[in-house]
Length: 506
Image (cartoon, rainbow, N blue to C red; front, side, top):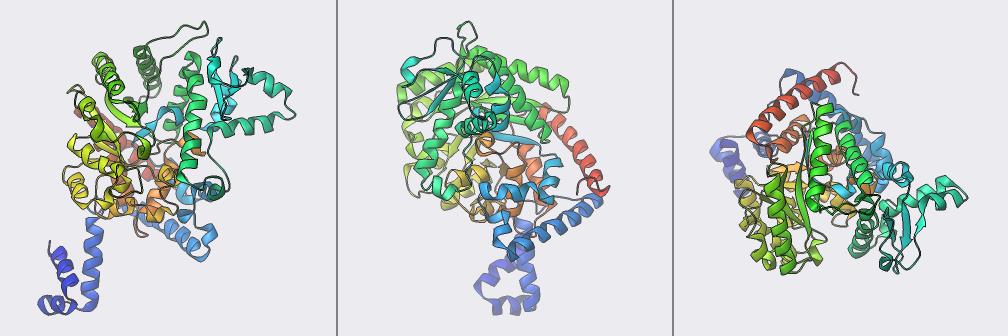
């Protein structure tokens, strides 16, 4: 409190602070820096002796990497677009540290874009029976249906296996196939010059892949791989957004949405049995935010029935799609207010660069609707009253740095408003959103930008540990589940600290 008072006084008058506190210029300066450090995320996180040693090691590598980037802007991964920075990040000692670090939970992940595009090409695209066609706009549609929806396409459906066999080079074919579900380009500034162009391409990828993923064998294989990639990246739990589309099988039968939820439930149960240190997933139903009110009411009613069947698995409701073009939350209040009391809202809000538009005002309605967390919250920094409400009510902001960059909100992630949220100790969790669609896997790449770009240069293990613990603290795990989660996390964290000190991480 004394340091914060000094800070206020300093902003009023430097001479006044020196006269009233008898502090030298250097002492006053240090008091302000210390007060800021204590205010930010991680400022009050305790590090034991072993952790403090690891922090010293980590900071040596971090400051060295930042210094190299300062000397050579072309090598400054923290300031570069992910598509340009990824080769540098893959060689980074900090990234290796983060890959091996227990990361707790990921609380904002869309299932259709959760798996690496390489797996989709190497495994899913080689499944027998996969068909492809082209729409009038040139978008490819993938499906396993024996009787495809011909009206969707301008071209005839062809077997992917036949296309691959008839191609001059299978590797080239596979690389071109991967482009259907991966935004990567070496020149994002040229290929996606506007937010509209990148969002159109982004949405096309969901539309290309989604019907293939609702084929029952593909659905099972894909979501098992999703869990494998999270587990291998040292993530112990996830809350997944899914539109819960109806599944179909090889005979052409279709199944209800309840079957889709139960398939996810069964996959999760089997995976957790094989990996007792993985706590599994819970599901948030994601509904297109462009629906008219009557359609939204129908979706809420369907959610009510699904939630009633598995209330601790299907835990919440969200709206998805490009927020700037979707219906404002205010216009959907009659539907959103009718959600069952045992469920929760997890609303995307403020995923925009606009200020004073319906999109950033969605943040206000999200808070008035008592959202459990806020997805992205990019525009929150422009609304100080809402920012204070989020902090005082301890509503976590789900920050997905790479997503915000790739989808055109910010180029240099050092300018991301998440830096302000960390500086003010706003509740924050680091998320990956749609990693499979931009050549990423797991959560470590987003953690890299969180600690190298959003956090200050002198921030190390205190910030990382706080973010990891936040990911469990702000989850929907029950009290009993959280107790188990923290026990597992404490054990895995302690083992990780020992590995760093034994020299097996760096």
